[in-house]
Length: 308
Image 1 (tube, rainbow, N blue to C red):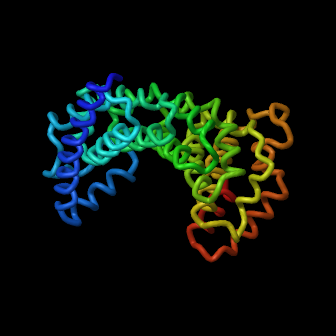
Image 2: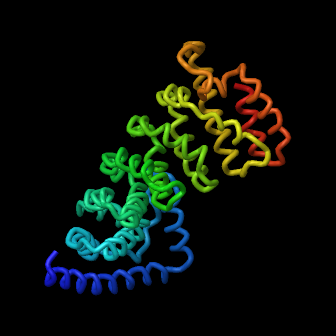
Image 3: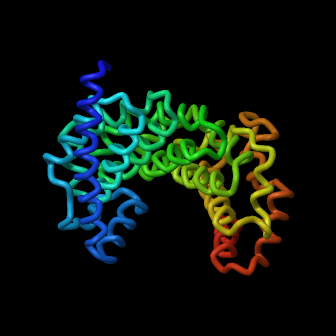
Protein backbone atom coordinates (compact mmCIF):
# COMPACT_ATOMS: atom_id res chain seq x y z
CA UNK A 1 0.00 0.00 0.00
CA UNK A 2 1.38 3.43 -0.99
CA UNK A 3 1.93 6.10 1.61
CA UNK A 4 -0.88 8.45 0.40
CA UNK A 5 -3.39 5.59 0.38
CA UNK A 6 -2.14 4.33 3.71
CA UNK A 7 -2.52 7.78 5.21
CA UNK A 8 -6.05 8.04 3.80
CA UNK A 9 -6.99 4.69 5.28
CA UNK A 10 -5.59 5.67 8.67
CA UNK A 11 -7.52 8.92 8.57
CA UNK A 12 -10.69 7.05 7.68
CA UNK A 13 -9.99 4.62 10.50
CA UNK A 14 -9.72 7.46 12.99
CA UNK A 15 -13.06 8.90 11.86
CA UNK A 16 -14.77 5.51 11.79
CA UNK A 17 -13.14 4.58 15.07
CA UNK A 18 -14.65 7.62 16.70
CA UNK A 19 -18.01 6.79 15.17
CA UNK A 20 -17.76 3.17 16.29
CA UNK A 21 -16.84 4.23 19.81
CA UNK A 22 -19.89 6.49 19.86
CA UNK A 23 -22.10 3.66 18.66
CA UNK A 24 -20.66 1.35 21.29
CA UNK A 25 -21.22 4.04 23.92
CA UNK A 26 -24.86 4.22 22.81
CA UNK A 27 -25.09 0.45 23.09
CA UNK A 28 -23.72 0.58 26.62
CA UNK A 29 -26.03 3.46 27.49
CA UNK A 30 -29.02 1.32 26.66
CA UNK A 31 -29.03 0.10 30.24
CA UNK A 32 -28.69 -3.26 31.90
CA UNK A 33 -31.61 -4.71 30.00
CA UNK A 34 -29.87 -4.10 26.69
CA UNK A 35 -26.62 -5.51 28.04
CA UNK A 36 -28.36 -8.69 29.15
CA UNK A 37 -29.95 -9.04 25.73
CA UNK A 38 -26.57 -8.70 24.03
CA UNK A 39 -24.90 -11.21 26.35
CA UNK A 40 -27.71 -13.70 25.89
CA UNK A 41 -27.51 -13.37 22.13
CA UNK A 42 -23.77 -13.94 22.15
CA UNK A 43 -23.95 -17.09 24.26
CA UNK A 44 -27.18 -18.79 23.29
CA UNK A 45 -27.50 -21.51 20.64
CA UNK A 46 -28.61 -20.47 17.15
CA UNK A 47 -32.32 -20.84 16.53
CA UNK A 48 -35.14 -19.34 14.54
CA UNK A 49 -35.91 -17.17 17.57
CA UNK A 50 -33.82 -14.10 16.87
CA UNK A 51 -31.98 -12.35 19.74
CA UNK A 52 -33.68 -9.29 21.21
CA UNK A 53 -33.29 -6.22 19.02
CA UNK A 54 -31.98 -3.03 20.60
CA UNK A 55 -33.04 0.40 19.39
CA UNK A 56 -29.35 1.38 19.70
CA UNK A 57 -27.97 -0.30 16.58
CA UNK A 58 -25.51 0.73 13.90
CA UNK A 59 -27.23 1.64 10.65
CA UNK A 60 -26.41 0.02 7.32
CA UNK A 61 -24.31 2.96 6.19
CA UNK A 62 -22.00 2.75 9.23
CA UNK A 63 -21.65 -1.01 8.87
CA UNK A 64 -20.92 -0.69 5.16
CA UNK A 65 -18.13 1.81 5.86
CA UNK A 66 -16.58 -0.57 8.36
CA UNK A 67 -16.74 -3.45 5.88
CA UNK A 68 -15.19 -1.30 3.15
CA UNK A 69 -12.42 -0.25 5.53
CA UNK A 70 -11.72 -3.90 6.34
CA UNK A 71 -11.24 -4.51 2.61
CA UNK A 72 -9.10 -1.42 2.07
CA UNK A 73 -6.54 -1.72 4.84
CA UNK A 74 -3.73 -4.16 5.49
CA UNK A 75 -2.91 -2.59 8.85
CA UNK A 76 -3.51 -5.37 11.43
CA UNK A 77 -4.33 -2.91 14.22
CA UNK A 78 -7.09 -1.32 12.14
CA UNK A 79 -8.32 -4.76 11.05
CA UNK A 80 -8.56 -5.87 14.67
CA UNK A 81 -10.54 -2.80 15.72
CA UNK A 82 -12.95 -3.08 12.78
CA UNK A 83 -13.51 -6.80 13.46
CA UNK A 84 -14.14 -6.12 17.15
CA UNK A 85 -16.72 -3.45 16.27
CA UNK A 86 -18.44 -5.68 13.71
CA UNK A 87 -18.44 -8.55 16.21
CA UNK A 88 -19.99 -6.39 18.92
CA UNK A 89 -22.63 -5.07 16.53
CA UNK A 90 -23.49 -8.67 15.59
CA UNK A 91 -24.96 -9.18 19.06
CA UNK A 92 -28.17 -7.75 17.56
CA UNK A 93 -30.25 -9.64 15.00
CA UNK A 94 -30.86 -6.65 12.74
CA UNK A 95 -27.12 -6.11 12.36
CA UNK A 96 -26.59 -9.80 11.63
CA UNK A 97 -28.86 -9.52 8.62
CA UNK A 98 -27.38 -6.20 7.46
CA UNK A 99 -23.81 -7.52 7.60
CA UNK A 100 -24.82 -10.60 5.59
CA UNK A 101 -26.64 -8.50 2.98
CA UNK A 102 -23.54 -6.29 2.62
CA UNK A 103 -21.43 -9.38 1.85
CA UNK A 104 -19.70 -8.90 5.18
CA UNK A 105 -19.57 -12.62 5.97
CA UNK A 106 -17.29 -13.43 3.05
CA UNK A 107 -15.07 -10.43 3.79
CA UNK A 108 -14.73 -11.37 7.46
CA UNK A 109 -14.28 -15.03 6.49
CA UNK A 110 -11.45 -13.99 4.20
CA UNK A 111 -9.54 -12.77 7.24
CA UNK A 112 -9.24 -16.37 8.50
CA UNK A 113 -6.33 -16.90 6.12
CA UNK A 114 -4.45 -13.92 7.57
CA UNK A 115 -1.05 -14.76 9.00
CA UNK A 116 -1.58 -12.50 12.04
CA UNK A 117 -3.07 -14.64 14.87
CA UNK A 118 -4.84 -11.68 16.52
CA UNK A 119 -6.61 -10.79 13.28
CA UNK A 120 -7.76 -14.39 12.79
CA UNK A 121 -8.94 -14.52 16.40
CA UNK A 122 -11.03 -11.35 16.02
CA UNK A 123 -12.47 -12.64 12.73
CA UNK A 124 -13.49 -15.88 14.44
CA UNK A 125 -15.10 -13.94 17.30
CA UNK A 126 -17.08 -11.84 14.81
CA UNK A 127 -18.23 -14.93 12.88
CA UNK A 128 -19.17 -16.56 16.18
CA UNK A 129 -21.67 -13.80 16.96
CA UNK A 130 -22.85 -13.71 13.36
CA UNK A 131 -23.48 -17.47 13.43
CA UNK A 132 -26.41 -16.98 15.81
CA UNK A 133 -28.44 -16.44 12.65
CA UNK A 134 -29.54 -19.52 10.65
CA UNK A 135 -29.20 -17.77 7.29
CA UNK A 136 -25.71 -16.64 8.28
CA UNK A 137 -24.78 -20.21 9.15
CA UNK A 138 -25.58 -21.24 5.59
CA UNK A 139 -22.80 -18.91 4.40
CA UNK A 140 -20.38 -19.41 7.29
CA UNK A 141 -20.38 -23.20 6.85
CA UNK A 142 -18.00 -22.88 3.88
CA UNK A 143 -15.28 -21.86 6.38
CA UNK A 144 -15.74 -24.78 8.78
CA UNK A 145 -12.80 -26.82 7.48
CA UNK A 146 -10.57 -23.76 7.56
CA UNK A 147 -11.67 -23.05 11.14
CA UNK A 148 -10.80 -26.65 12.02
CA UNK A 149 -7.33 -26.15 10.51
CA UNK A 150 -6.89 -22.96 12.51
CA UNK A 151 -7.85 -24.80 15.71
CA UNK A 152 -5.37 -27.57 14.95
CA UNK A 153 -2.46 -25.25 14.07
CA UNK A 154 -3.04 -22.71 16.85
CA UNK A 155 -0.91 -22.85 20.01
CA UNK A 156 -2.45 -25.12 22.63
CA UNK A 157 -4.94 -23.30 24.90
CA UNK A 158 -4.49 -20.03 22.99
CA UNK A 159 -7.25 -17.46 22.51
CA UNK A 160 -7.14 -18.21 18.79
CA UNK A 161 -7.80 -21.89 19.44
CA UNK A 162 -10.65 -21.12 21.84
CA UNK A 163 -12.22 -18.67 19.38
CA UNK A 164 -12.24 -21.38 16.73
CA UNK A 165 -13.78 -23.91 19.10
CA UNK A 166 -16.52 -21.46 20.08
CA UNK A 167 -17.48 -20.98 16.45
CA UNK A 168 -17.46 -24.75 15.85
CA UNK A 169 -19.72 -25.16 18.88
CA UNK A 170 -22.33 -22.89 17.31
CA UNK A 171 -21.95 -24.50 13.90
CA UNK A 172 -22.42 -27.99 15.37
CA UNK A 173 -25.64 -27.29 17.26
CA UNK A 174 -27.52 -28.81 14.32
CA UNK A 175 -26.23 -31.86 12.46
CA UNK A 176 -26.21 -30.09 9.08
CA UNK A 177 -22.46 -29.49 9.03
CA UNK A 178 -21.11 -32.30 11.20
CA UNK A 179 -19.62 -34.09 8.19
CA UNK A 180 -17.26 -31.17 7.69
CA UNK A 181 -15.69 -31.83 11.11
CA UNK A 182 -15.06 -35.58 10.78
CA UNK A 183 -11.36 -35.25 9.95
CA UNK A 184 -10.84 -33.02 13.00
CA UNK A 185 -12.09 -35.56 15.54
CA UNK A 186 -8.52 -36.73 16.41
CA UNK A 187 -7.56 -33.08 16.97
CA UNK A 188 -10.56 -32.49 19.25
CA UNK A 189 -9.72 -35.56 21.31
CA UNK A 190 -6.06 -34.53 21.53
CA UNK A 191 -7.16 -31.15 22.92
CA UNK A 192 -9.44 -32.95 25.35
CA UNK A 193 -6.48 -34.95 26.65
CA UNK A 194 -3.87 -32.17 26.66
CA UNK A 195 -5.77 -28.91 27.11
CA UNK A 196 -6.50 -26.84 30.19
CA UNK A 197 -9.91 -27.03 31.82
CA UNK A 198 -11.04 -24.04 29.76
CA UNK A 199 -10.07 -25.80 26.54
CA UNK A 200 -11.54 -29.11 27.67
CA UNK A 201 -14.93 -27.51 28.36
CA UNK A 202 -15.03 -25.89 24.92
CA UNK A 203 -13.93 -29.09 23.15
CA UNK A 204 -16.54 -31.10 25.03
CA UNK A 205 -19.26 -28.71 23.86
CA UNK A 206 -18.33 -29.61 20.28
CA UNK A 207 -18.02 -33.33 21.04
CA UNK A 208 -21.39 -33.47 22.81
CA UNK A 209 -23.01 -31.87 19.76
CA UNK A 210 -21.31 -34.33 17.41
CA UNK A 211 -22.10 -37.36 19.58
CA UNK A 212 -25.82 -36.52 19.52
CA UNK A 213 -25.78 -37.33 15.80
CA UNK A 214 -25.88 -41.13 15.22
CA UNK A 215 -24.17 -40.63 11.85
CA UNK A 216 -21.08 -39.39 13.68
CA UNK A 217 -21.01 -42.21 16.25
CA UNK A 218 -18.80 -44.62 14.32
CA UNK A 219 -16.22 -41.91 13.64
CA UNK A 220 -16.09 -41.05 17.35
CA UNK A 221 -16.14 -44.65 18.60
CA UNK A 222 -13.12 -45.57 16.44
CA UNK A 223 -11.01 -42.81 17.95
CA UNK A 224 -8.20 -43.52 20.41
CA UNK A 225 -8.26 -41.62 23.72
CA UNK A 226 -6.31 -43.58 26.37
CA UNK A 227 -6.85 -40.89 29.02
CA UNK A 228 -10.62 -40.54 28.52
CA UNK A 229 -11.54 -42.39 31.72
CA UNK A 230 -9.65 -39.80 33.75
CA UNK A 231 -12.51 -37.37 33.09
CA UNK A 232 -15.01 -39.59 34.94
CA UNK A 233 -13.88 -38.86 38.47
CA UNK A 234 -15.37 -37.15 41.51
CA UNK A 235 -12.50 -34.66 41.65
CA UNK A 236 -12.96 -33.45 38.04
CA UNK A 237 -14.36 -29.97 37.39
CA UNK A 238 -18.16 -30.24 37.44
CA UNK A 239 -18.63 -28.57 34.04
CA UNK A 240 -16.15 -30.97 32.47
CA UNK A 241 -17.66 -33.98 34.21
CA UNK A 242 -21.23 -33.17 33.16
CA UNK A 243 -20.22 -32.74 29.53
CA UNK A 244 -18.09 -35.90 29.56
CA UNK A 245 -21.09 -37.82 30.92
CA UNK A 246 -23.37 -36.31 28.25
CA UNK A 247 -20.83 -37.36 25.60
CA UNK A 248 -20.74 -40.90 26.97
CA UNK A 249 -24.54 -41.07 27.28
CA UNK A 250 -25.02 -40.01 23.66
CA UNK A 251 -22.59 -42.63 22.37
CA UNK A 252 -23.97 -45.38 24.63
CA UNK A 253 -27.47 -44.64 23.33
CA UNK A 254 -26.29 -44.99 19.74
CA UNK A 255 -24.50 -48.23 20.57
CA UNK A 256 -27.66 -49.66 22.10
CA UNK A 257 -29.90 -48.38 19.30
CA UNK A 258 -27.71 -50.15 16.74
CA UNK A 259 -29.01 -53.41 18.26
CA UNK A 260 -25.85 -55.41 17.84
CA UNK A 261 -24.95 -54.21 14.34
CA UNK A 262 -21.77 -52.62 15.69
CA UNK A 263 -19.22 -55.40 15.37
CA UNK A 264 -16.45 -55.27 17.95
CA UNK A 265 -13.87 -56.38 15.38
CA UNK A 266 -14.28 -52.97 13.72
CA UNK A 267 -12.76 -51.27 16.75
CA UNK A 268 -9.34 -51.54 18.35
CA UNK A 269 -8.96 -52.14 22.07
CA UNK A 270 -7.89 -48.57 22.88
CA UNK A 271 -10.87 -47.05 21.10
CA UNK A 272 -13.73 -45.12 22.67
CA UNK A 273 -15.97 -48.05 21.73
CA UNK A 274 -14.11 -50.34 24.11
CA UNK A 275 -13.99 -47.63 26.78
CA UNK A 276 -17.79 -47.31 26.85
CA UNK A 277 -18.90 -50.83 25.86
CA UNK A 278 -21.01 -52.76 28.33
CA UNK A 279 -18.15 -55.09 29.25
CA UNK A 280 -15.85 -52.26 30.31
CA UNK A 281 -15.13 -52.95 33.98
CA UNK A 282 -13.18 -49.73 34.47
CA UNK A 283 -15.96 -47.54 33.10
CA UNK A 284 -18.55 -49.37 35.22
CA UNK A 285 -16.44 -48.77 38.33
CA UNK A 286 -16.11 -45.08 37.46
CA UNK A 287 -19.88 -44.74 37.08
CA UNK A 288 -20.52 -46.57 40.37
CA UNK A 289 -18.22 -44.13 42.16
CA UNK A 290 -19.98 -41.13 40.58
CA UNK A 291 -23.30 -42.28 42.04
CA UNK A 292 -21.97 -40.83 45.30
CA UNK A 293 -21.16 -37.45 43.74
CA UNK A 294 -22.69 -34.55 45.73
CA UNK A 295 -24.15 -32.93 42.58
CA UNK A 296 -27.65 -34.11 41.67
CA UNK A 297 -27.23 -33.42 37.96
CA UNK A 298 -24.09 -35.54 37.84
CA UNK A 299 -25.92 -38.45 39.46
CA UNK A 300 -28.82 -38.05 37.02
CA UNK A 301 -26.44 -38.27 34.07
CA UNK A 302 -24.84 -41.40 35.53
CA UNK A 303 -28.24 -43.05 35.96
CA UNK A 304 -29.10 -42.10 32.37
CA UNK A 305 -26.08 -44.07 31.19
CA UNK A 306 -26.67 -47.03 33.49
CA UNK A 307 -30.29 -47.61 32.44
CA UNK A 308 -29.52 -47.56 28.71
